[in-house]
Image (cartoon, rainbow, N blue to C red; front, side, top):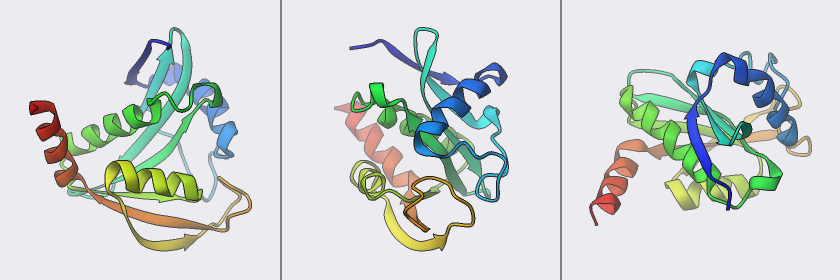
Length: 160
């Protein structure tokens, strides 16, 4: 099992982040789907000097955060890295006052993962405006979670 560390992204990480995003067809930045990638709101998973995963977010309002772009290198999937990256960005959004989080996903397995591990609920769909993600799926499923509730559950789990 590799020794993976999660840390805030730095400017020099952007080229490696962009290469990782190619695995999930989300490297078209800037585009109508993703106008920019602001590394200051991203985390990276490292195996030594190698970036093997990334996740980002942005704050939409005083109480709402939104996830952006998450990917784990195919050789490192199913090791819990995605769970750690998601938890890190959820905590970062909570520290900035977010109480709920919105996520858009296209792949059915990703949607199931968000629902299973983080309590997301489907709240709608949005048409894609640019080829991004799975090119065979033409809409985003919009998911929403109660961040306050998730944090309370995490704190309860940690107390046990």
